Length: 399
Image (cartoon, rainbow, N blue to C red):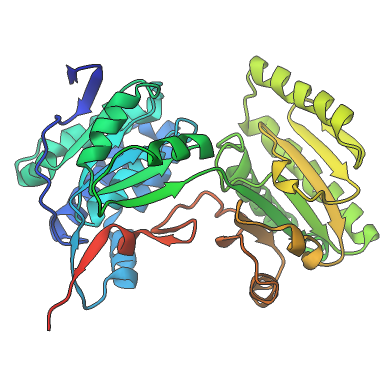
């Protein structure tokens, strides 16, 4: 580990080999597969579901599926050097961003979150272990993972000047500031800012399912929300229940009664988060005039039923198991309110045909992902409407 001018190089060094290689190069695919194996075998890593999810994503079988979908007949190379500014609220996001840069044939400077979450230490330790294998010498020379104070703009400016591409994850204001920094004329900027996600559940479908399928649904919903404390941009905050009032009431009782059982077994709510959650409840009670009812299941589930969808309903954000609910007979109830801030629509019991018609017929400016419950956090090369494989490579036109 090196520290130079207030930058701590957790892995690698400042000067990198920045000549690009071909996307999905056999060596990078092999490296990720061996990284996957070393993470899966690590007993401490097994305690963190997000680390294991990343490890499974890196498996050879999955990378081959992605490669088959993305690689065409064009001659392609990476851009060169990609600078990644990763978010502090999603612990393994840096690892996926690094993998995207690696698989597209780029050298990578990856800014890690300043706080040393155990997930970061686990993954970095295994990256170092695999980098030190002789066969991965070239990849090692092309990559650095580092930490520095996010308020130190001079360091961000320095790395921005060198980059052929930048992936910026963070709040809108952070992105706006970084985009003003001087860059190369042909730099490719990909920014992932503040986004909003919500869930649509068909009440009739919930009422019909068996107890076994209900338990699976609850586990999947838990994974979408509680694992990241609803901090991920793709975690839903609002649930729109579809159906008649009678069906919705029955489905809600069935759904929430089962969820509280699961949450009690799996979730640990820190005391400070209990306070934050209750403060939000008090604030909502004072400021939101369209609240119909509150339902509190101890401190683990807060449900706020609203009588109408406000124009800016993307501001209805909860954390730590704080959900807004709205009843409707038709998914189109929110169509006029969806804007470019909307990212993921999570669904259960709604047909894909109905969902695609909802987006296309209403010509929505927002919603870049539509996924079943349980897949909200599944990150991939297509994200926020970007195809990262195309954005992080250049085409050589051979005639």
